[in-house]
Image 1 (cartoon, each protein chain N blue to C red):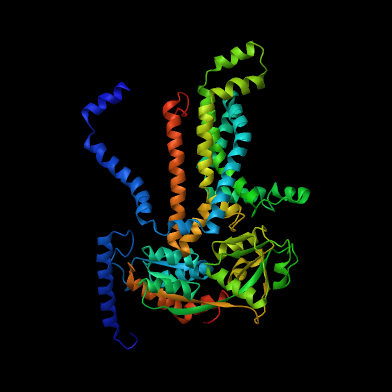
Image 2 (tube, chains in turn red, cyan; image 1 turned 90 degrees about the vertical axis):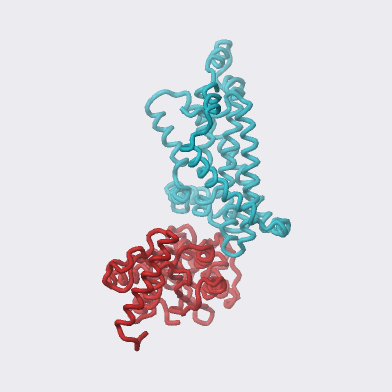
Length: 266
Length: 274
């Protein structure tokens, strides 16, 4: 791509887009990549991105920047638990890009031939989130096992739940949570609402919540991380748009947005 | 009845038959898909897993408790709404039906704000009595009652309004106290609707998802009811999700069969759409 002359790339992209336009209008998937060739940039229409809920803030920013750089393009974001999104994609949800919070859920999509390959674009570690008043006086991971402490975790099939289980195993702490939430954002919300004494979420979630929660760092010795893979999907209604968006996430500009949200390099 | 028969003689116009058929297919095909894709061979194994049985038992218990609560508080409320004149009562009646049309998740958020540890009522429950409802089985029952009770109220109130008040007046004239009239005359009069309303209420409570997962959370054994389990299973084991859905479908059909008999053979059973 890098060495190819610009005009060739442009012709190729226009061809790809018009092909996508044809196939999607035939299938009538609604609103995706309909206006082939009407935009001045080489990608058009809507790009549907299914992203892990921990990516909410950074992908909203990325989508806005991408739309600004490509007038006429709309990035439609669908956030949820990676396990849920993988299930949706494998059941035929019309998505162009999948950004998962765990290689496991990406593998489910690749195994089902939903994507050919993926690229890890960030890494995230966990942190304990407590309400600002810290009603249970949590100061370390061992405090979470105290009786009477109301703890919210992600359910085990969701990446943040898997990684949390790893952290507790590393720390040799056995906890009894009061709830296993569907995704990391709903775990965080329970802490923000002060309904639980603590929740285990990603560092990036604590940062995005601002003053609404207080973060308690988990020592590196016991902390665990998860890699985030991204892929354009084989059945993408807007294949050209999908590739452009993935490239943008992997670009220096995209990585800077993610780094400022607290994500680490993979 | 006569009009119906006349229509049948003329046949169904194509203009109605086609959308009707599409409508029926739309409602029926998903249920059919559930039956076709069900893992019939492993069904017994899937359904006898202990966590499935736990979720099923929790669902049945909570739905029954929610129905009981709805009867205790909903029937008197229906009576007040049906028998009191005035603009305030009309307003109350409208308010009571709000949970009926409210998205259940919104109901769950509202419950958290009211009865959560920091809620406007919940903080006193916590500090005075040490009661916290979220993330407990009691919280599941509260969420289900909130969503399901209006079904009972609307059904019973409709029956109360159409019931023959002459009988109640006769009983009063003969010296029965108001509470005796309610117990010995009114309740038997509306019994079919009471049953229909309870069944509707129970079925709605059994299927409750949004308010439960928002207010009571999701933990196996304490708050994870069947619909929550179906949703969770879909992420890891779709076959199990289908098997669980099948159980809920069977329960729903059973409820419907029971209701249909009520509505067919009892005069005052169904609430009249006014």
